[in-house]
Image (tube, rainbow, N blue to C red; front, side, top):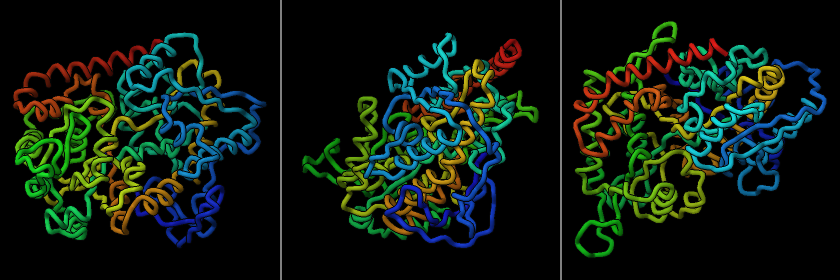
Amino acid sequence: MRFLKKTALLLACVIVLSSVLFSCENKDDDIDREGWWLSDEGGRPSTPDDLPEDIDFEGYEFFVFYRAGDWLNFYECEGDLSSEVNPVYQTVYERNQKIQARLNAKITWVPSNNGGRVETASQITQILNSLEYYDFFLTTNNTAVSYGNNAKLIDFSMAEYINLNQPWWWQDVINEISFDGSTINFLVGDMNIVNITKMSAFYFNFDLIEERLRKSPEYFYNLVDEKKWTIEILDQLSRSCFKDLNGDQREDENDSYAFPWTGGETVNQFLWSTRVADQLYTRSADGRTITLNFKGNDDIVTLVEMMTKLLHENSGVLDYSAMPSGTFDGKIIQEFSEGKYVFLPQRLTAATTDYMRDMETDYGIIPYPLMSEGDEYISDIQDSSTCIFAPQVAERVLDKVGICIEALCAEAYRYTTEAFYNVALKNKYARDDNASRMIDLIYESAHKSFIVEYGSQAGNIAGTLYSSIYGKTSVATAIASKADAAQNKINTFIGDTLKTMQAY
């Protein structure tokens, strides 16, 4: 299931972006996730919420727990008024000030003890099992969704002031990460701007595609437009990209390649940015039954074979999977910016880094390649994207919690997302108009899959595809040995969660 958005237009962003001016064009009003809502009256800044006008929480202090790390703090939590590097940080800070004044309340942001995924998830579980209190949590999906604490969380469908019909809520994503398709434990809205950075994006170096491939940027943009940008095309092009930089007449990490790859970081983005991502499961009409679609799925077998060939049997592709965990992303982005690779399979995050901003050679941005010509583009939102949830003990102040979350997301929709998407991403980080257009395509085709998000609760059956590619083993054999156990595990998870929820 995908959420779709139409092409964004420049608009006036006036609160803290005084140094940047935008023009506002007429467009039909669509007050939903189908488009960037603009109007003659000021567009996003004029979009109202339906919260009470006379809110007064009399100085109530909200305590919000989040996964430690400057990337989350600046983009979604506290922001930074003094930042001259990124105007988005300023809008986040101003958002908080405005909401605190509007509610007559204070928002205290509390980072986790450790920024690691496992450590943060463990701390959240401890909080949920103790008397320690937080009004709500804001953290990454892989520290929340995949740990199966749903029964201990508030169902936001019961929150009076959370209006999921408002344009700042990403409804398809919310439904996808619901354990049964209807219970809303995890919210995703425009406050969760990290979700945009986590969308898969493929980069290419203008100079190197000319030098190694005799291709122009328009060649790749046209391939995308004609839906001919495929894994097979990438495989063919990559074979011509190797260059022996040190003259030792052998391939090693000091040479230049089409692109490098590591374990799940690279492989999973290729996998979940193809049509296979839509085929992993079906959900019953009542949402309570999940049927895995791995057995007998020819597309899955074909895709794994294609990816194995690309990554293991192509001299232009560098196996970087032995890199220590945590150093891969930054290192390859830096090396791409220095001209070591023709392509960079990454996420939109890469475009926001100092490496890419300072890159002297121009680069293009396109979606990940299709499995077959004519497919629809899918852009995986990695599981390190973010969501909002609240402990059941916060039900006693659910009105306050709901109003605070709704107000934060509404204000982010009005200013923060626009500042990031149009001001920074499409105009500051994109190097040409086509790249800006491709960012719209990536944004419009963003996708999450329940089976990927709830990997551990589904017997890690989705991880079977990655393991088969990484280890060059038979995916059909692996599926045959694991699919039944995975089906039983997801059935048990849903059943146990429903029983536990009824007991609370």
